[in-house]
Length: 475
Image (cartoon, rainbow, N blue to C red; front, side, top):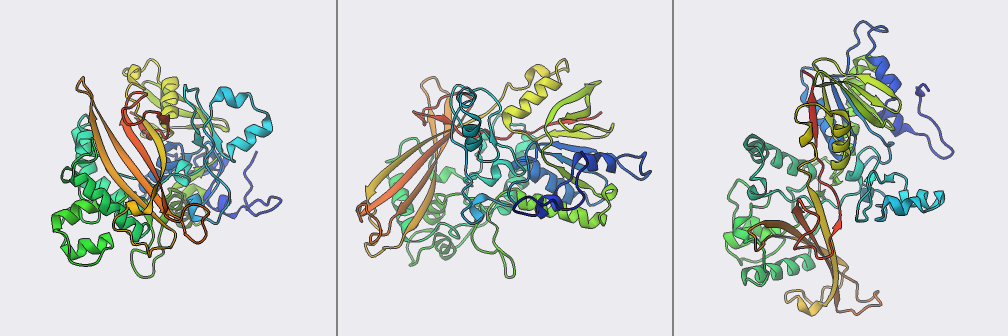
């Protein structure tokens, strides 16, 4: 069916955003057909998946191509859902699907399955633990994620190729931290509760009361001061504290406990708007609209196209390279000098590669190094008086978020690295039915491991898979 040229109207809305950002596969194929236009060019970069990684990659490649040599096509299996993170919008009621399994989901009625999906969630594989699945939509789980973005330690990257680690350390880690808002601190989570929690946690770490915690002196600086030597007054300002206490070293270490959240609460400079919680969709939308403006509404000249509801089922491989991409809407060719990027989730990318590259040298190694991200949550309540520096005069509703990196060595010499996300809130004494002297705290332990269990997560559950991109280059 031909894609409607104008914004379609539903019973309730006019789909301006979807039509202005996206194209149909029929439009993409027609724009590359030299039988229609002699000046038509094929797409030489085809990105399979328009979620967190695929959307960011499409935007990055489009803006980097200053010579206008490439045409980029992003194929996403789900629809256009939201223009930014769900928490940046008024209360819509969208959320992450409840953890379940395919076996359990199949036992439910169609109405119950639809309610579970929360519009776009789905399960793509069987598992021996329940989990929410994937968000099948442009932007993927970047529309829902919590925003915690700690930088990987050098010890965690020890087995990675040296050139990759070098580029991450010298460029890409810093660039991504700046782009998603992690480089800022105390502009979203701040105040008396945050300061009291951080100071008490710092004192406990210094006293050796927290086992398996990595010494703060061994951790990289907070992104806001990394690569330079800040003054004590600057560090106190970043921490949101007053007075003259603390050495530069102590304040610098305490700053490492600030939660690395991908949230920008204040504009970076005058005349700009803050990004709030990061998602990949604003980047993708900006690139799509600039591509449209550059092409002057001529699809043949449009260097970036985004096709939603286009599920890639197989890659045709001939002579060791991908030559065609097969989808539920039809196929599209890959030119001899083109590349196909698999930017689906960890399992989905692996499955597509296994189903497409059987018999190709090295195909037996696909899926041998998957990384699982396990998480366990613990919610506790403790009296406000347990926070020595929190004044009883503080009566506003406040939130705090802190970060601790840990490492455990097993008796066989193997090790696990975990990070602990500590969040807390204090209720308004006058409006809460609970004790006016209580504080609620949630601690999440998220270990990085290649197995299905962890020392740090006694009742571990599958959380989010780390996205892994696989690229196949046409020879």
